[in-house]
Image (cartoon, rainbow, N blue to C red; front, side, top):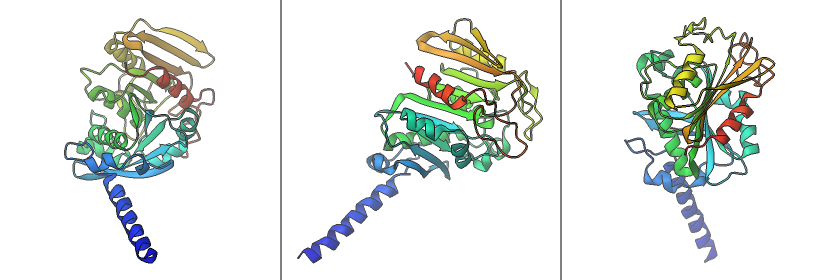
Length: 312
């Protein structure tokens, strides 16, 4: 009798596992997870780094999730957006977010832009910018799918990114209320943002950035990004958040200007004298890229800011 029951149990277990895995990436046409996705539970996102897909606008998009071995419930979530010509895999490897998540117990999501770029408005950048890809909808769908499989604290969802990815973080804050704070690095704001949502902002930028000039105007990179000055973008968010006048501190090459805002929000600009287009404290990028500034660990500084500024 046991010889009959054992295969039967094994077969049933396999069917249950297959059903759970097939539900992991399912979404309704409105971009929200189906019931099967929600029912699949946290086991759909294992400890460590894992690959996932979601269908948005009839296109299957991909992203990575890093889940540390220890995770608070509900857990904070950080979305890290790669730069132009980058990828989710490259971003996970380059900027130290997995190690920060291990130490501080939060989830990291690394979405993949189509054609290694993001549509951030103003015709930028690459194929997504030319084709009008709805990357905001994609990022919202990613967040919905992860929230359906892990216990995520809705008040502690954050977005950061470098260059084109940092601009995408600005776009997410302009067009949605999905995040409590953003942290664009080596990035500017392109396209319309008439009614930005009140969020906390920490921006990091080098004065010698040639791709996205600190003082505004056209950059020398492939995309020829022509945007406003970094201080003026920072002022836009201080106005949106009804902040007090900023106060500044200087430590060597680094000037930090921070403004306190209602609702326990803050808007901060970290300016690095002489630094180029880079993520401070990261590993060296592709050959010919500006070297990372060694005097600041941007990942740690951003997480400290995020942790202090949940949505209220």
